Length: 330
Ligand SMILES: NC(=O)c1ccc[n+]([C@@H]2O[C@H](COP(=O)([O-])OP(=O)(O)OC[C@H]3O[C@@H](n4cnc5c(N)ncnc54)[C@H](OP(=O)(O)O)[C@@H]3O)[C@@H](O)[C@H]2O)c1
Image (cartoon, rainbow, N blue to C red; front, side, top):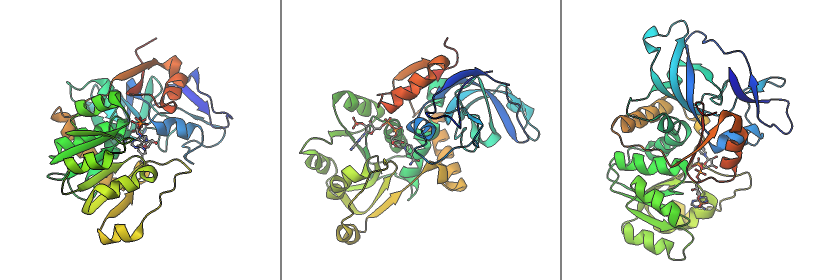
């Protein structure tokens, strides 16, 4: 099969296209013919050694990309043959495995291949794993967001987009999103945000308070170091702020008394370390929203497998919309 891969000895770890043996599913695994491979920041960061994680030992290879969608074409021992032909979306395919989704086929434990409804596109399926599961966990780890006011920072990003749609689906009373400009505001509005605020405006806090007079109860936060002051200035007592992103230099200065006096919980999460039961719950919530037609793909930026390196560069460069590798495109 054709695969985009990098050597785990490579320095710098550039992606190359190689013809390698098609993997067979082991016990408990399924093989998926990939239609679309979704690219997330974690994929290029892992490739460049910025996450401290590598599935493959030195001297081996790594096919990148955690997310993807496609069709099961073979199953290993212990997996029902009825799954052959099933459309699926994948989660954490390259976590603990050399076989990510930037290839014609991957093999994953059967539980990482989640049924994709017929009316959901492969592009949407490849947008779910990292973004939607992160969003679902952030939104629900302290109880469902139903009836609550939610603020999603970076509402046009992949996680932010999923968080807005999931918050809507879960019955949030109001969803406020922050963005940096009009194009991203349009994306956040389209996803279902009731109020969209430019976080760079000096009046951002006032605008959020107008939309949430009794305060924001849940925050899905992409930039805690930059936004903690804004968040605290609009938080309701007992609010929960879940931070899911940081670069290696991020430092947030926590005003302990203000946090304590308002009973505010500041929480951090990394999808790779979410306990199995919580991950399963996030998959269930995402699947329920998907089945209800409540999730959508961001505008797609499509690359071929031969352009896998360019796809990674696009995400690293802060592409707006969803970057995917289309395995059916030459
Ligand atoms: N902890 C985890 O398990 C986990 C899971 C998924 C993703 N992540 C991380 O989360 C980050 C976002 O991932 P993604 O896939 O959603 O990326 P993305 O699609 O590039 O979206 C990031 C969004 O954040 C916005 N943003 C940047 N700085 C901001 C600020 N100060 N305030 C508000 N919004 C801001 C960006 O827009 P503007 O720059 O225009 O504002 C952009 O829309 C990445 O660093 C990724 O590695 C972590």
